[in-house]
Image 1 (cartoon, rainbow, N blue to C red):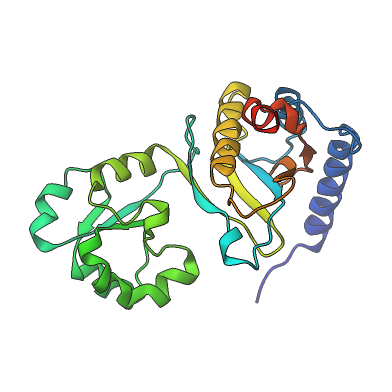
Image 2 (spheres, one colour):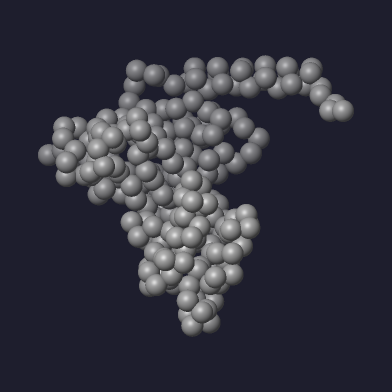
Length: 249
Protein backbone atom coordinates (compact mmCIF):
# COMPACT_ATOMS: atom_id res chain seq x y z
CA UNK A 1 0.00 0.00 0.00
CA UNK A 2 1.32 3.42 -0.93
CA UNK A 3 2.21 5.70 1.95
CA UNK A 4 1.10 9.12 0.69
CA UNK A 5 1.74 12.15 2.88
CA UNK A 6 -1.19 14.40 1.98
CA UNK A 7 0.04 17.20 4.23
CA UNK A 8 3.43 17.25 2.51
CA UNK A 9 1.82 17.32 -0.92
CA UNK A 10 -0.39 20.22 0.13
CA UNK A 11 2.59 22.06 1.64
CA UNK A 12 4.72 21.54 -1.47
CA UNK A 13 1.83 22.74 -3.65
CA UNK A 14 1.45 25.86 -1.52
CA UNK A 15 5.17 26.61 -1.69
CA UNK A 16 5.19 26.16 -5.48
CA UNK A 17 2.16 28.45 -5.89
CA UNK A 18 3.78 31.06 -3.68
CA UNK A 19 7.07 30.87 -5.57
CA UNK A 20 5.43 31.08 -8.98
CA UNK A 21 3.36 34.09 -7.91
CA UNK A 22 6.50 35.81 -6.66
CA UNK A 23 8.33 35.00 -9.89
CA UNK A 24 5.48 36.32 -12.04
CA UNK A 25 5.36 39.54 -10.01
CA UNK A 26 8.88 40.36 -11.22
CA UNK A 27 7.89 40.17 -14.89
CA UNK A 28 6.08 42.89 -16.83
CA UNK A 29 3.92 40.93 -19.28
CA UNK A 30 3.46 44.03 -21.43
CA UNK A 31 7.20 44.47 -21.93
CA UNK A 32 9.57 42.92 -24.44
CA UNK A 33 12.89 42.48 -22.67
CA UNK A 34 16.42 42.88 -23.91
CA UNK A 35 18.09 39.46 -24.08
CA UNK A 36 20.59 40.17 -21.30
CA UNK A 37 17.91 41.56 -19.00
CA UNK A 38 15.67 38.57 -19.70
CA UNK A 39 18.48 36.15 -18.85
CA UNK A 40 19.16 38.05 -15.64
CA UNK A 41 15.48 37.84 -14.68
CA UNK A 42 15.07 34.11 -15.24
CA UNK A 43 18.19 33.46 -13.16
CA UNK A 44 16.92 35.74 -10.39
CA UNK A 45 13.46 34.15 -10.19
CA UNK A 46 14.59 30.52 -10.50
CA UNK A 47 13.35 28.74 -7.37
CA UNK A 48 13.58 25.03 -8.19
CA UNK A 49 15.90 22.83 -6.16
CA UNK A 50 17.44 21.33 -9.29
CA UNK A 51 19.43 22.69 -12.22
CA UNK A 52 16.55 23.82 -14.43
CA UNK A 53 16.69 23.75 -18.21
CA UNK A 54 16.52 27.10 -19.98
CA UNK A 55 13.72 26.83 -22.54
CA UNK A 56 13.05 28.96 -25.59
CA UNK A 57 9.76 29.17 -27.47
CA UNK A 58 9.49 30.88 -30.86
CA UNK A 59 6.27 31.73 -32.68
CA UNK A 60 6.79 31.59 -36.44
CA UNK A 61 4.82 33.08 -39.30
CA UNK A 62 4.54 29.81 -41.21
CA UNK A 63 1.77 27.37 -42.05
CA UNK A 64 3.07 23.91 -41.02
CA UNK A 65 0.11 22.31 -42.79
CA UNK A 66 2.00 23.07 -46.02
CA UNK A 67 4.93 20.69 -46.41
CA UNK A 68 7.06 23.45 -47.95
CA UNK A 69 6.73 25.54 -44.78
CA UNK A 70 7.90 22.96 -42.25
CA UNK A 71 10.86 24.39 -40.34
CA UNK A 72 13.27 21.74 -39.11
CA UNK A 73 16.97 21.50 -38.40
CA UNK A 74 19.71 21.51 -35.80
CA UNK A 75 21.48 24.30 -33.96
CA UNK A 76 24.96 23.98 -32.49
CA UNK A 77 25.12 25.35 -28.96
CA UNK A 78 28.45 27.16 -28.40
CA UNK A 79 28.04 26.85 -24.62
CA UNK A 80 26.87 23.24 -24.78
CA UNK A 81 23.52 22.02 -23.48
CA UNK A 82 24.50 20.91 -20.00
CA UNK A 83 23.47 17.36 -20.83
CA UNK A 84 25.49 14.20 -21.38
CA UNK A 85 24.42 12.81 -24.75
CA UNK A 86 24.72 9.07 -25.44
CA UNK A 87 25.46 8.41 -29.11
CA UNK A 88 25.09 5.18 -31.08
CA UNK A 89 26.64 4.68 -34.51
CA UNK A 90 25.18 2.06 -36.86
CA UNK A 91 27.53 1.26 -39.74
CA UNK A 92 28.80 -1.41 -42.12
CA UNK A 93 30.88 -4.22 -40.58
CA UNK A 94 34.00 -3.05 -42.42
CA UNK A 95 33.70 0.41 -40.83
CA UNK A 96 33.45 -0.75 -37.21
CA UNK A 97 37.12 -0.34 -36.29
CA UNK A 98 37.35 3.06 -37.99
CA UNK A 99 34.28 4.49 -36.26
CA UNK A 100 35.16 3.14 -32.81
CA UNK A 101 37.64 6.01 -32.57
CA UNK A 102 34.94 8.69 -33.06
CA UNK A 103 33.96 9.02 -29.40
CA UNK A 104 30.54 7.41 -29.83
CA UNK A 105 29.24 5.45 -26.85
CA UNK A 106 28.63 2.40 -28.99
CA UNK A 107 29.49 1.46 -32.56
CA UNK A 108 27.78 -1.51 -34.14
CA UNK A 109 25.97 -2.82 -37.15
CA UNK A 110 23.01 -5.19 -37.41
CA UNK A 111 23.42 -6.04 -33.72
CA UNK A 112 22.22 -2.54 -32.74
CA UNK A 113 19.26 -2.83 -35.10
CA UNK A 114 18.29 -6.16 -33.51
CA UNK A 115 18.63 -4.62 -30.04
CA UNK A 116 16.26 -1.82 -31.05
CA UNK A 117 13.75 -4.39 -32.33
CA UNK A 118 13.91 -6.02 -28.90
CA UNK A 119 13.06 -2.71 -27.24
CA UNK A 120 16.55 -1.74 -26.15
CA UNK A 121 16.68 1.95 -26.99
CA UNK A 122 19.40 3.22 -24.70
CA UNK A 123 20.82 6.17 -26.66
CA UNK A 124 19.87 9.79 -27.20
CA UNK A 125 21.10 10.04 -30.79
CA UNK A 126 21.47 7.41 -33.50
CA UNK A 127 23.86 8.11 -36.38
CA UNK A 128 24.21 5.98 -39.48
CA UNK A 129 25.75 6.01 -42.94
CA UNK A 130 23.87 6.24 -46.26
CA UNK A 131 24.90 2.65 -47.02
CA UNK A 132 23.11 1.40 -43.87
CA UNK A 133 19.85 3.29 -44.32
CA UNK A 134 18.02 0.36 -45.91
CA UNK A 135 18.84 -1.80 -42.89
CA UNK A 136 18.08 0.97 -40.39
CA UNK A 137 14.70 1.57 -42.05
CA UNK A 138 13.61 -1.72 -40.45
CA UNK A 139 13.32 0.11 -37.13
CA UNK A 140 11.88 3.36 -38.50
CA UNK A 141 8.52 2.69 -36.84
CA UNK A 142 10.27 2.29 -33.50
CA UNK A 143 12.74 5.17 -33.67
CA UNK A 144 10.58 7.58 -35.68
CA UNK A 145 7.88 8.31 -33.05
CA UNK A 146 10.63 8.90 -30.50
CA UNK A 147 12.40 11.41 -32.73
CA UNK A 148 15.45 9.14 -32.91
CA UNK A 149 15.38 8.01 -36.54
CA UNK A 150 18.55 9.08 -38.40
CA UNK A 151 17.71 11.85 -40.84
CA UNK A 152 19.87 13.45 -43.57
CA UNK A 153 18.29 16.85 -42.83
CA UNK A 154 19.54 16.62 -39.25
CA UNK A 155 22.99 15.45 -40.27
CA UNK A 156 22.58 12.03 -38.65
CA UNK A 157 22.86 10.16 -41.95
CA UNK A 158 26.43 10.83 -43.02
CA UNK A 159 29.75 9.40 -44.11
CA UNK A 160 31.55 11.94 -41.93
CA UNK A 161 30.61 10.13 -38.74
CA UNK A 162 33.48 11.50 -36.64
CA UNK A 163 32.48 15.11 -37.30
CA UNK A 164 28.80 14.51 -36.48
CA UNK A 165 29.61 12.62 -33.28
CA UNK A 166 31.83 15.50 -32.20
CA UNK A 167 29.07 18.05 -32.88
CA UNK A 168 26.42 16.02 -31.07
CA UNK A 169 28.66 15.43 -28.07
CA UNK A 170 29.69 19.09 -27.84
CA UNK A 171 26.05 20.18 -27.76
CA UNK A 172 23.46 20.69 -30.44
CA UNK A 173 19.70 21.02 -30.35
CA UNK A 174 17.20 19.65 -32.86
CA UNK A 175 14.13 21.74 -33.65
CA UNK A 176 10.91 21.25 -35.58
CA UNK A 177 7.90 23.53 -35.87
CA UNK A 178 4.70 22.12 -34.38
CA UNK A 179 1.20 22.22 -35.87
CA UNK A 180 0.54 25.61 -34.26
CA UNK A 181 3.62 27.21 -35.82
CA UNK A 182 5.72 27.14 -32.64
CA UNK A 183 9.19 25.82 -31.91
CA UNK A 184 10.17 24.76 -28.39
CA UNK A 185 13.64 23.71 -27.26
CA UNK A 186 15.89 23.46 -24.24
CA UNK A 187 19.06 25.44 -24.92
CA UNK A 188 21.08 25.12 -21.72
CA UNK A 189 20.96 25.13 -17.94
CA UNK A 190 20.13 27.89 -15.47
CA UNK A 191 23.57 27.33 -13.90
CA UNK A 192 25.15 28.69 -17.08
CA UNK A 193 26.46 32.24 -16.97
CA UNK A 194 24.37 34.95 -18.63
CA UNK A 195 26.92 35.22 -21.44
CA UNK A 196 26.75 31.46 -22.04
CA UNK A 197 22.94 31.53 -22.21
CA UNK A 198 22.99 34.52 -24.57
CA UNK A 199 25.47 32.76 -26.88
CA UNK A 200 23.14 29.77 -27.10
CA UNK A 201 20.07 31.94 -27.68
CA UNK A 202 21.78 33.79 -30.52
CA UNK A 203 22.96 30.54 -32.10
CA UNK A 204 19.49 28.99 -31.86
CA UNK A 205 17.65 32.00 -33.29
CA UNK A 206 20.24 32.29 -36.06
CA UNK A 207 19.62 28.65 -37.02
CA UNK A 208 15.87 29.28 -37.11
CA UNK A 209 16.40 32.28 -39.40
CA UNK A 210 18.63 30.27 -41.75
CA UNK A 211 15.88 27.63 -41.93
CA UNK A 212 13.23 30.10 -43.10
CA UNK A 213 11.24 28.57 -45.98
CA UNK A 214 11.24 30.68 -49.15
CA UNK A 215 7.47 30.13 -49.34
CA UNK A 216 6.87 31.80 -45.95
CA UNK A 217 5.43 35.28 -46.47
CA UNK A 218 5.15 38.22 -44.10
CA UNK A 219 6.73 38.39 -40.65
CA UNK A 220 8.69 35.23 -39.94
CA UNK A 221 9.59 35.70 -36.28
CA UNK A 222 6.46 36.73 -34.40
CA UNK A 223 7.50 36.17 -30.81
CA UNK A 224 10.35 34.77 -28.73
CA UNK A 225 9.92 33.68 -25.11
CA UNK A 226 12.46 32.53 -22.53
CA UNK A 227 11.72 30.50 -19.41
CA UNK A 228 13.03 27.79 -17.11
CA UNK A 229 11.55 24.36 -16.44
CA UNK A 230 9.42 25.57 -13.51
CA UNK A 231 9.30 29.31 -14.10
CA UNK A 232 7.12 31.77 -16.02
CA UNK A 233 8.14 33.04 -19.46
CA UNK A 234 9.76 36.34 -20.36
CA UNK A 235 9.07 37.85 -23.78
CA UNK A 236 12.17 38.95 -25.67
CA UNK A 237 12.61 42.05 -27.80
CA UNK A 238 13.16 40.59 -31.26
CA UNK A 239 15.05 43.68 -32.42
CA UNK A 240 17.76 42.94 -29.84
CA UNK A 241 19.03 40.16 -32.08
CA UNK A 242 21.58 41.51 -34.53
CA UNK A 243 20.82 38.82 -37.10
CA UNK A 244 17.12 39.61 -37.03
CA UNK A 245 17.67 43.35 -37.18
CA UNK A 246 19.83 42.92 -40.27
CA UNK A 247 17.22 40.68 -41.88
CA UNK A 248 14.52 43.30 -41.40
CA UNK A 249 16.44 46.12 -43.05
